[in-house]
Length: 157
Image 1 (cartoon, rainbow, N blue to C red):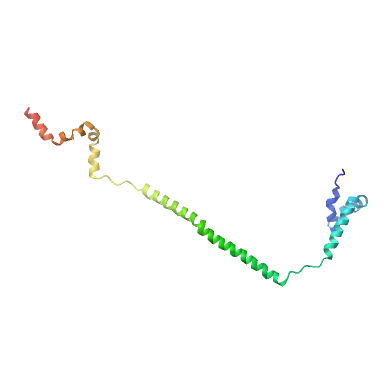
Image 2: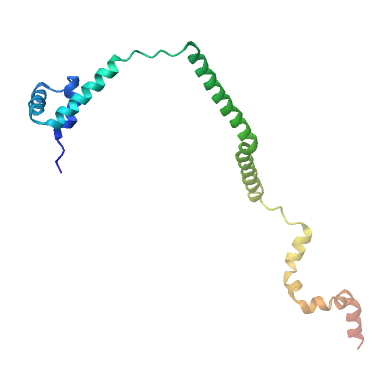
């Protein structure tokens, strides 16, 4: 199994005249001794002759018109798809954004609002909270409502 010739990568540049003069001289000397590189350069030259001998291909008159019609059709399909995408999926991000904005605004409005001042009933309840927490007294509330009568009974005895 032979090793690859490192000059093979320079052959195309050599053939096109793009190598510096000292490298071009080295490749030219190498071609005298290397059969593989000689065959490769002959193949490259044959391909070059074939391509330069071809006549230029001219597109038909209808080609340009047909090309731009196809482009317009593709663009129209994209536009129609994007519009249908908006109606199918596009409104959801806007709805989610609006809902989140509403929730944040409601939280800020109602959470930051100070509680109203207590009314007279609430003040009375707060003053008598200890009394209200004593369940025994609440259970005998009917006695407290008639306290004057109970007091007169106690005085009579």
